[in-house]
Amino acid sequence: MKAIYYKRGLFSGFEAGLRKGHIGVECGQIAKVDRILFYTLAGLLNAGLVIVSLLGIYAQLNTIRKRKQSTSIESTELISLNQAFVSYFAYLSFFVYGFSISPFNHYLVWPRLAASLLTFAIIYEIWLARRNFKAVGLFAVAAGSLIASVAFMLAGGEINDQSKLISTALIVVVTLFLVQGYAHQIYLIVKHGKTGAIDIRLSQSILIKDISTVLLAFSMGAIEHWPLMFLAVTSGITKLIIMYLFYWVRTSPTALSRAS
Image (tube, rainbow, N blue to C red):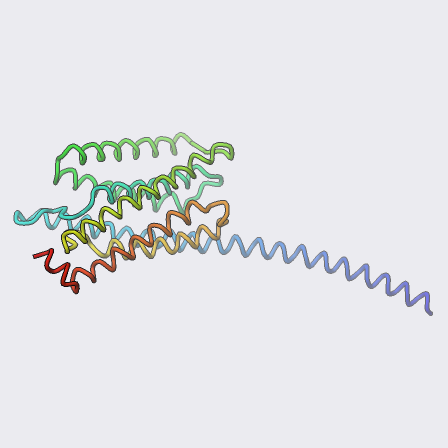
């Protein structure tokens, strides 16, 4: 009886081990499915919010076009060309990053292409309104980069692991320029004590999009895709500052005196 007890004990332990291994495999499969589901939901949320942010970009574009109908005000008053240009490149860099990684990331590519086109339209309106050397030069660079990026995607361009530093460096550089561009926009608002032709809906919609981009980067792998988080967090901070300045110009005596 004692021997049988030990055999049963040995068999029970072996069977428990098999069950434990089987459960471990199942848990791994469930965790994988959960990650895919999290990525899909985060991607859909981000794509949806980028589409919502398109409404903010369109609102800014529409504000410019409405102001063009008046001869007493400048259609692009206090809109920083630097800020518009780097915002355009921020969208374009996400677009390039999305089609150059493997697998092709539809959540990043198509919404960002649409945002790039709308922001490019704002740059075009600034060029029409100002017609100076800087506006012409940045418009030409924006047009050339848009054509080159779309052509690269249609040609099946893909950045491999060895050269992935290119897309990473692109986003980091764009982020640094984004800081410079929005710093210039903030400076113009503070200097003149008013927001001019700037539409707050643009900042509001982009801020929501930036939050969802951070979530998407987490779902893709925060360590591997940290450039997305870096750009989104930086962009979000600048939008919060600009949104605060809309309150500041209405309530600050300094702003009111500068605007008068």
